[in-house]
Image (cartoon, rainbow, N blue to C red; front, side, top):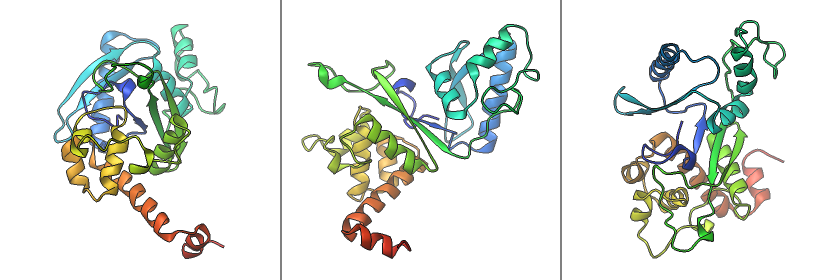
Length: 255
């Protein structure tokens, strides 16, 4: 699931697995459609489909169908532990899913769908500042030059891990402290325009007391994600106010 709303290229958007904001009905609706598309086109092997789903209704569109192994396939394979390329190759040679053993688990067959009890985030990396007169606005054309993948038990954990990997100078997801937001451009404008630093502008707004609803109105980022970022902002504030790490541990039941 993409963190950013429709309009930002998947390669330039934060991607979260498994999907966090879809209802069970929405998930199985899209899954059923994917199976219909694959069978109609007669695809044998690997395929991934990108959807645009209206969060206020069950209306959806298929953006693209990739009947091949792509960067998204590599991410999905690493995130789930399901060897997509290996299984796709075996299928193309005429074997069926029941007879193919999962090369990672060694016990289950390839017809078992992976189930995640953890959270994975893919975060893109840009090098736009290396070039003069290059716009940092994100759109339907991909601008990122790489990506990182973070794995953890919660969204708050993985989003901060990803931030540290993309920019080693950061100690986590901070707004004002990151130094990546502008004092010259109004914060609302920074929120409304998708850029390579909008995530930090969102965090700065939440640190400054903006409500989740107000930030959602400016960015159209799902409120579930914004509520998790708000948790990070509150925790950072509490840690700063506490001032001492030993005091923080003692107040939370640690020796």
